[in-house]
Image (cartoon, rainbow, N blue to C red; front, side):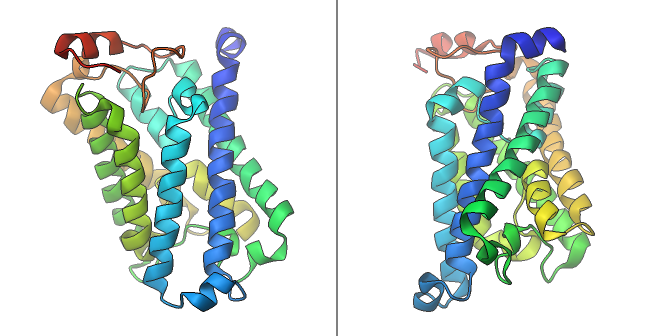
Length: 269
């Protein structure tokens, strides 16, 4: 653990910063599109339309972070469930996985606290509530199932795209498109988390404790199920790296075989 911290601390800080920035954006856009006094809410009264705007905003945020120099360096997980899944797939050392998750959690909390300092009381108002992820009309059980399904689909797409030479460079775009779609269409069911650290960061100031277990358990379960299916169909050897976007100019701290993917098909990274 000490050696990992000494050698890989920049990646841990990057993961913290990535989720921090994601949460800062989520809080800002959530307030703009959810607070009753917001001019956008008054101009766009339809909830579906505002969810679509939120989806586009957060989908583009995810894409920007994945393809940013920081995202290319750390692999742009900013999600403990994603990191856990790549550990299960043998791509991440245990110490790196633990410190990634710790950094992601700290970064998410820091992002919400920074947003609270910048936005003030509107962030905690009704309709915003620190962008906490909460079950909708389907209740806790339905929200749990929904979270398992959406994370299963997300990780299935990430694994298929990132390990196919002709699709690998589009992995971040696919992930961003799913984020946008889920926020637009699925968020009324579960609140659309997919990320334990993201939900914890909002739950702390919002006091949304009773249903936090959903967002701690369901996303890892969905992603691990996707990984299990992928391995059963294609084998562990068909997982080349843990990065969502592999840039050869950036160092890779994972158990990486990405160089075997591109030359085999003549594709570039």
